[in-house]
Image (cartoon, rainbow, N blue to C red; front, top):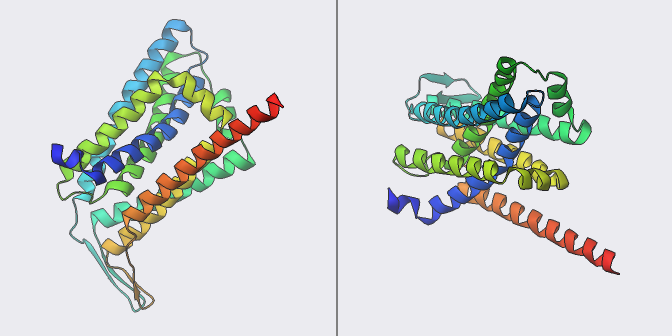
Length: 268
């Protein structure tokens, strides 16, 4: 186990998943804050603690369910048409459905960020309640949505990273725990950074689309799909990781450069 966790592929996956988990978890915490804002001091604190506990439990439960489905590699549905052939297994079906979900989620969220910014905040604000039970129900729904995003993202980046699924589950669990703990500890600073630089959130959503497409292709490949006379190929995860890491580094360089330019303009 230790040999796997300190290997180069595992460390790259751990770093990438932790950073992406932070980007997604910041919005999770922000929306929870809005949902419980009308509660009084003690109830608000209890609601936040309970919501964070649920976030941990939901992510780990979904993680185990998802990787159990991934273990179902035997085809249960054979398709044999003149233009479409393949064998669908539990693993390939989950990858295809999960990929489509991430494509949909990333696209709709980018639309709301650009075309109707603040839509989710306005909707949550209109549904705020001073009743503890109702606020907990709202935060539970939020945690379910964000847990799906994070677990499916992890699946898309780590599926078949190692021949032993238990090792991959431990790696993903560590990354999810680290990302959520970092967001909890540095919540105010991270919220301020994301508010000042909304491009970070946009990039996170674009990465959801990238990983979603990768999952869709991988699911088709594992189903041995033959479409219109051609076999579906596979996208190397190395290219996906490379694209994610380079885009994140470039964004931070651009933000840093922009900050230096603003300082220079103010001093002139």
